[in-house]
Length: 369
Image (cartoon, rainbow, N blue to C red; front, top):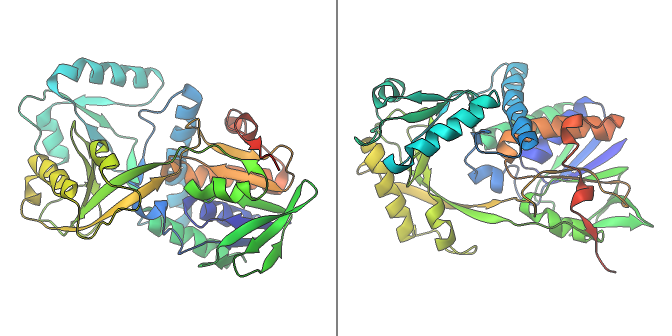
């Protein structure tokens, strides 16, 4: 079986890796560099602490477990950090924090409510405000350096015979009747396949549209800043009422807040860093004082891939044999799991029951031609 994968982020490389190990003939086409779009700037936060309904929560829990399994499978997995997540609210919302923790516990998802003193035993450089009495700790959650993971998955795929093409943009899909039979690249090259899997993130709808398939998308932006090396030690993801931050390697910290996502236009210049970047850093300094005086090295915009109903779209497209969609938000958490489950379906026709509510048939439509 010949499979073409469009997109070389976390989803595309996870699928390529698993299909190649299933001995499929795999070619992956990435318009830029591997992991160079959303995978390069996503938070890499592995979690299921706020994801509903229950079926989606469970899928993400299994996605987190898949990361641990993958790390053991590779043996050496420097991209994977089972470091937990800390979250606190303003004092007037402490009851909400407790209720949320109790709801997750009822689903079998561990949450600990810690004192600030206990938090400082976990993260000594972190300053919890004096008026905060409880901090939620999510021990199952963690972080992944997605660009490293993308590289590892692509390398393993290539070792098993996959052909990985970068700077190779797919212009359109090839249609024979209703069947998808391959792709045409922007340079006019055509490549045939038995199945084409679209894993192109927020650009997936554009690729699908060339085959007469309408995939509703609701992409959004995430504005992140990245500090220079700081004299701090931070291992956890940290969520506060006005800023979120995480370690970013070599003493650097990534920080963001939803409040300012809309302040940066989709094509806005990020050099020099917009004023909101300095405000984000000032907020982070309140909780991580060691960041004081540390410069901002850069700012990036993440283009989140969000299907129109905010749920994964995974499976063969009804009425378009040969076309498979693999598109989701939370690709960092779900990527390795969905790559494996999609490979089983493509290579062997085995659809996992966990995907029952996430097929394309619920959301895609046919474009009027």
